[in-house]
Image (cartoon, rainbow, N blue to C red):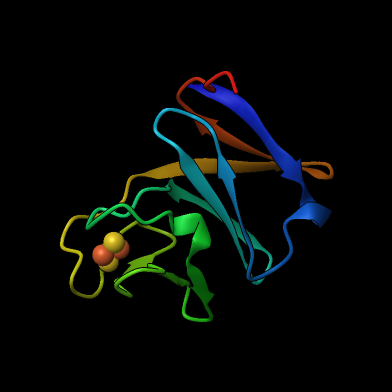
Length: 107
Ligand code: FES
């Protein structure tokens, strides 16, 4: 696992997400000041979870068919998704957000 810079804390406000070009691609979310990282590709289809909707109940809703996943565990909570999303560890150091993830893909 590599420690990959995501962005400055100030660049990822609550309710927002950021897509990181790793393999697999990762979505990092800020839910009310807590940061979470999940595999970006919905387990049901081609949706990018970084385009999803961060909810107050610590979930993210897929932007295509509205399946909800737990931000903490990646668990698929509602249909049509039945397979959980992978989760990744997030670290905040100083003013920066990092994710512990497989190697970053060259852009
Ligand atoms: S693509 Fe995400 S629920 Fe269908």
